[in-house]
Length: 304
Image 1 (spheres, rainbow, N blue to C red):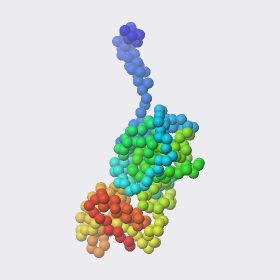
Image 2 (cartoon, rainbow, N blue to C red):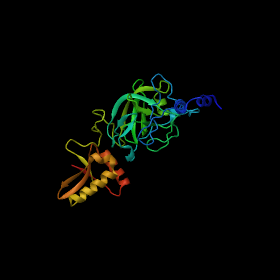
Image 3 (cartoon, rainbow, N blue to C red):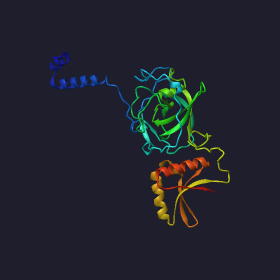
Image 4 (cartoon, rainbow, N blue to C red):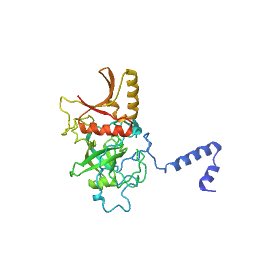
């Protein structure tokens, strides 16, 4: 019989129960606590390094045999991808509520970037893909998934393009968690974190000029509309308001990233379902192509 068991035997029945509870409680203290967040499959519930003095969070860090050609790994190539509806819902992480953006829009913000490595390598990201610490990806708490962003190290001016395919970091002073390779190319591996500027990239559009952190901005390009022109996409036209309303509801369900731009316009005796306005022709055409690929409709380009 073990020493603890002999000690408990000598006690009264009530004190035996109390002593057993104490032993169980003490033995449970050695278990590592885990963060529980409500958004499915978010792999970076805890940010990488816990401070900006270097070091790795828990057992995170570089892999045992990292590729020798990290500097030659190309940046992510922005392209139009369907946004994942499941990642548009508000969620709670570490006691804070986050409300993800539901469409591609201008975003520009400065803050602290961290990185995550081998601890999450091979795990699922928030959109269900396998996290590859050697790919040019990143995690962001609110940018649409998937989407693309340019990240610039404010200190040294180095800049990269990453694909946002995960959620995190969830500490108030952090704005993005980079993959190991992305952090390497910005020279922040050793320090663990750095001040960066994160700017969203909208495929097919020229560089956005953000008016503020969350506000959409006008896009300047050779194909931009003039002040007298407004660009829309017409998805359908109906003779009755009820039919138009039903079609609009279907489009809002099928095209969640366009919800805020969809509406009904009554003109010439028809109820037209339009998306827009768009700030330039390239963006409108890319959106039309994406709609055509997802649905059995061909949007009509309208310039008014």
